Length: 176
Image (cartoon, rainbow, N blue to C red; front, top):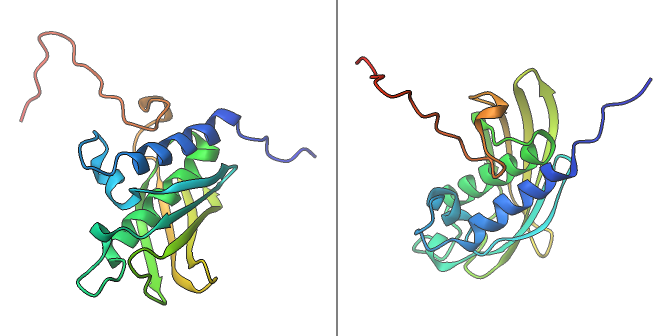
């Protein structure tokens, strides 16, 4: 009996590009500024078959008044890494429907962290993903577990995982 087929290579390449583009555009001027902010300065180490591995040196604009990587920035970065892990096998960006994060230790300004996101299960349109964040020393910073789903059909996204906007036929109007 044959196992599941390997996802096409373009899916992993698209996941890598999606993360790299967000990390390179951390100035808030990009069309994906919401994704860019928590990933500004990210280095994509690996994006393949259900896994996204990135490193990040914690920048000043993502820290609190005590110099700790802000919990909200951690959550947003985790969400993006999980989405990229899914994109590497499904070719689409999914949205979170359930998200659980446990925080273990703070990461400080300029500390390097590793974010390792992995797809762990598929059930219908739902995909379960985990992500671990560790310091260079191996100390655990946080673990995230989430279920994500496709909110639109696969054909409604472009190669970068962005939603395509369908144009309305001339003369059509929405009724409110």
